[in-house]
Length: 66
Image (cartoon, rainbow, N blue to C red):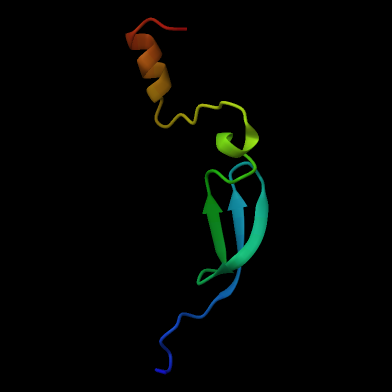
């Protein structure tokens, strides 16, 4: 086997925007994510709109929706 072929894995603390955090293995010691399994609609069972750049408001304004 070749030496120094595989990356070095360290404990990585992953922090979500909702405040949830967990530890996994990665090349980076820290990661910040937007959506995790604690706040994703698929896992929580509730519908939640993730609005980026006001697109939902633009749609509602264009079609006079409330």
